[in-house]
Amino acid sequence: MTTLKAINDLSRHTEPLRAELDGAIKRVLDRGWFVLGPEVTAFEQEFAAYCGASHCVSLASGTDALEMALRALGIGPGKTVLTVANAGLYSTIAIFATGATPVYAEILPDKLLIDPTDMKRILDSRKVDAIIVTHLYGLLANMRSILLFAREKGVPVIEDCAQAHGASRQGKKAGSLADIACFSFYPTKNLGALGDGGAVTTSSPELAEAIRQLRQYGWSKKYQASRAGGHNSRLDELQAAILRAKLPLLDTWNARRRDIAKRYNTGIRHPKITTPGTHGEEYVAHLYVIRTAEREALKQHLAAANIPCDIHYPIPDFAQPAYSALFTGVRLPITTQVCKEVLTLPCFPELGDDEVDTIIAHINAW
Image 1 (cartoon, rainbow, N blue to C red):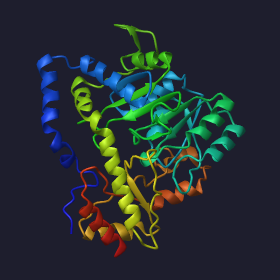
Image 2 (cartoon, rainbow, N blue to C red):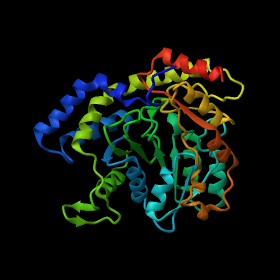
Image 3 (cartoon, rainbow, N blue to C red):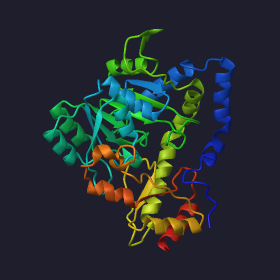
Image 4 (spheres, rainbow, N blue to C red):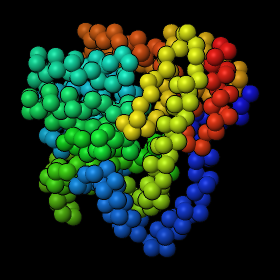
């Protein structure tokens, strides 16, 4: 039996940082500046440098980041955005918020990321105005192929890095691989705030300036709205200070997540379970997701042992009740099957090897 509270125990994650977090909060309280102040400016500079991008513009959430990235690229009514349907509806919500229409590519059956070949098929068959590439579960997509196909058609690419903070390939980090990138700092993320938060990174000064205007009513200067589609979407000073305290620890946390994922991969030996592949720096194990055709039975087995698990994500975007009537002709068999099989196991930096081994033993005994 285990005493795990959740698949990501935030109390265990934050408790060792109490002194640093208390100091960050006190610094903001003492200063008395709570919105768009020096903590936000410093965090934006530090996070841009960490990602290898020229600019970071912080926002109120990752979903806002996706919407504003689309708006900065000129996406609106009558436009079409290519994405995947197995990543929790977030890109679809952002696309609909701009008035544009999503079109879905199939995913790779082993990595569960966008299939570049199917993406190319769609680009060759219809007009697409932008592409959102989700680095799902902490694994970088094949950006080389994606960018090659996109550049041939002149289509801008957005990275959805909400689950991939710190993932890198050949020395280039998530957030620096496409035209513009979007992050969430929701508390369970690899780099999480103590509330909601998000950001956009880019090396385009024009796109960065567009996002800065969009996050504050579309203002080009105070009380002068020069850009349509603006929001009130600002990361506050307290969250920026907390993220600054956490950022230097991100690579260490990611390394531990990879160790946990490798331990699961090595230990789980069950004929009805498929584990994710073992990866290098391109994987930061935001979520450790297995697959089984008998998911409900495994969930009940784990629940009996007090082992928490979750499903990321059970319903394809095109099958969501709010939107399914718009996608009656969509047939993506791999996406549909994967959504019926995925199951997330606990994976966070403070998880002990003994706890991982206990979970492995219960799974193998199923």
